[in-house]
Image (cartoon, rainbow over all chains, first blue to last red):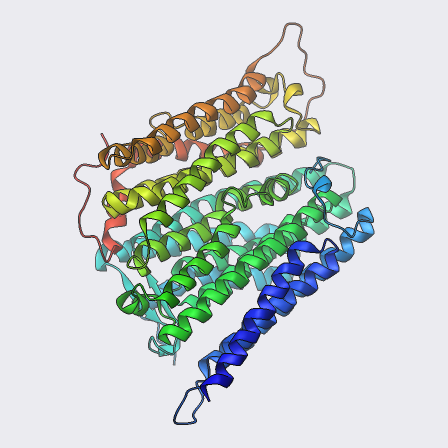
Length: 108
Length: 504
């Protein structure tokens, strides 16, 4: 049914928008990482919903392959982000990303 | 049975650094010794590709023998090979410099264990990034491009965090979040394209993509994603802290190469794949953002107190020139603007990595990079000071540098197409660039009366000469202008005209 397909796509878009909002508004690092994960789930939901083909009942396998690859990419990016967030908290005891740290100029 | 036909050379620039990366990761002691060999092998494979391009023209290669709609296609043409060559040349320079940089730091008796650990992680990450960059230039599949972009970002973020300082880690996580956002936006664009056309191959998209609403939404999403990654003003906020707080070879990689990858894709998308869907208003919008980047980046660079931040802001400014090309490409012939863009990218890659290397060498020797206290560096780092000055010449766009050719092409395109205001921005930007270049160069070359060298440092040729060589290449690039412009025209599918004679 076409409307099911559309429903999934719209849900995906809403998830993307929610994640984007949270990514911009929240300043806690963990929340930002979670927000980016929600965004990627939204994109994957949309992508998977394109696999549906009206009519013959067969399913397009290419979006599934793409979503699987995308999940792998997203997992590795999230892992890196979590490690970095831990390190940031250990070394500087900061869990918020705010403007005043942007131009921190202590050597490199 | 292994059949290795001539077309298979195309995978070598990806496979060599990738294999090196895995090898260096598994056996961490081999990195410092074998990395120059891997870099040279990659360079040789790029030269072979260049030769094949000159002999046979652009080629396609189907990975695993799977044809385009289902399989992933690699292709090489003029722009791709030139970008590969840019990465190869700069990459070899950076590899040699990094050898000198880490051995200098390990030789110092302070915190040896930490420096050794940094070096052990540097080599696999850098090789991974190089492989991903080459993959990005060669891929012809929009989803595969997403994967290579993510590989580039993850390696780049890990490299940016390598220095271990709190400032660099905060900058790195900011960089990661921004680039993740950019990738997701790009991926959403890919979803829209797949919904509309059901294919992922760039060449096939180019044939059928029109100005359908789905295409426009996709192009807008892809553009926003790539602009975030390219750090175009006003989305540049993450770039200066990430680039300035990293280790010196890493800064050179990030500033010289990584930002060019996403820009290259952006230009390809706009002028090859979706040339039917773009509008004059959107082109002018990008041009205005580019002009804003040139002026804002230069003004910020003039205000900085630290050398590495100054160089990072100058990257923001120089990236703006690449975007000035967008409104000019619509009216002037595409080829001329492609020439300007490729020249700008190549010259900037060499010059900017040389500048960051010089800044890193200065930092290593005197322990800080406060611009006002850099007086007299020339006395004991003459080659480095000269490298910085030559790279500065390129940023200002004085002849015969590659930057001059690029700006000349941009200026002539802007006056020929009756859009003189872009030309004015280019000239003002060059003037501002000369201010922030001279500000540092004056300090480096002044030797005040009664100046004595406080402490004699061991000289390291690997620290000084790669930077100087890259700066010299960026300076002399202008003399060899016709060759890259000739290579460029080989692969172009939609424009057949060759610039008569090139620039004067």
